[in-house]
Length: 235
Image (cartoon, rainbow, N blue to C red; front, side, top):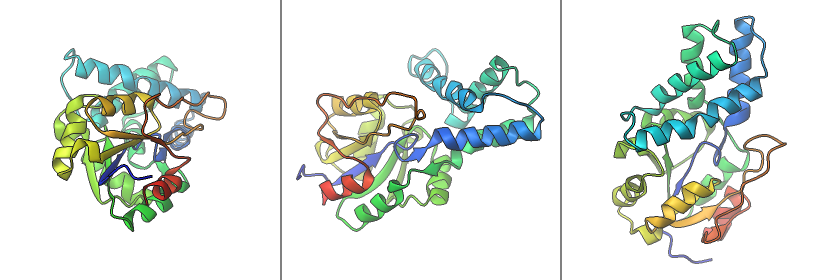
């Protein structure tokens, strides 16, 4: 398929990495050190579900912009209190915030990016994670992007239109030649409104084996089975 794509930017949490099992494992390890027991997958899910309200609060102007690590810490403190895990100490809490720097890649993601690296398509992250977070995450996860871009560079968060347009500007690519790749329909819909092309990659296990996978937006430009399939489509 030829869409005239010159560059592709990728959501990271969920699309390229398995945040749920990664964060659940680190929560369980921290809880074990503190002698605590909990439904750790449920704690991870609650932490992640606090993400959208926190972003909306920033985007609405209700709270000032803060780096994602700071938002993750405030969300974590609230969730630990909700689950009766206040005994978890400062050192472990700080370590858990950094768990988002250490997420494991989905198995297809590194190979798919390598295939894209051998093509003419420029690849970059476009995540709400900060530049430092993304640099560490992609390095340890073996995700070879040509460039690390973050919503932090726009002083905002997705789905603010400025984030998507910032990526096009910095990559010196017309929006219609820039592809947003994500497993989240809302991310793709927001990107499409700014003129970007969109690609949906399903991640049915993002929220665990019992969750229903999200359906792609009706007007998405292409659907790929995974990142390897995306590389084949864009070849």
